[in-house]
Image (tube, rainbow, N blue to C red; front, side, top):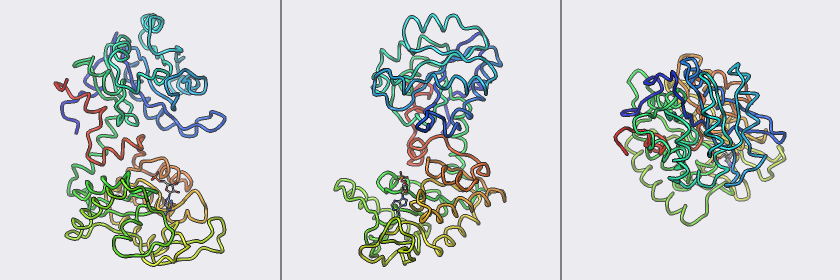
Length: 410
Ligand code: AMP
């Protein structure tokens, strides 16, 4: 997956300016306080390498969805204190990302300086794969570095068009390198890393069904939980009551087609595992109305919102015997304490199995939030910084941001 791509270790940045694309699209609360700084923390080694070699760093990133207009809400300025604190230097900022004034500011940088530019998405051209916008950005550095895994599934100017203007002088940073290297533990697995277990949950199957189709090729166990499991149960003749199911016609046709393929393929190898029981309710906010039901016979008017105790044990047994584990998506409506036990139990089991020597990779905001709820996040081998990018990679798609870095591909 990393063939014909330069990494940051292939360059020495002395007297050079790195144009570093990061993904600083960090989650913030209503007071604009960062609720999870993982993406910033993970980008620090790349910045440190460049400045320790006496190079200059010009950081470009997006934040939120300002839809092509400058706005205070989406300014990247709020990152200056945290970046300066972690890097132990005074990070500079400029309130634009292209133009003569930015170029002047870049030219004034000294070796070891770090300059953060304003949100790329203040220009609508960022999301349009725009050659002119890319050309303007390309004036700001000697070497292009992509460390924005979380944005690398997007065909946006700074991800796909910009690197092409740097010919051989482009590479991935340490964060990207880690994400690719850890994903390869699944794609290019060695015998000693097996069994490989992949657990997928979440609400909707349409966004993840192609992943299942691909991971059948290398996973030893695929565990499906949450709303994702109901299309399988229906297909097997079960009754799911009022449980979640996608009803949009186009999506249903696509799901149906791939489901049949998956089920046929899995009949040969028994690797696809569905929940056995679920916690059902006929009143979302009242615990008194919850009960355990077989997932195959949920009464009308009742909704399955978490996996039940037998399913927890069933899934946890697979996790416990695994050497390599990937988890994306909650197995229930974990935001509600009445339906969070399944997801928290999974988080705990993955953390404990990691402590015993397994490798674990967890991605997606909800799964990471569930790990944090239980205090298990520090025990996981690697928390992916990409939600959508991780899912796209699992479909065996070479991300646009990686493709554009392949040498001799222009
Ligand atoms: P996704 O964005 O597809 O990963 O879905 C995440 C959401 O799935 C979370 O907000 C969960 O509350 C929700 N979810 C998980 N299991 C279920 C379920 N059985 N029924 C409805 N929603 C669910």
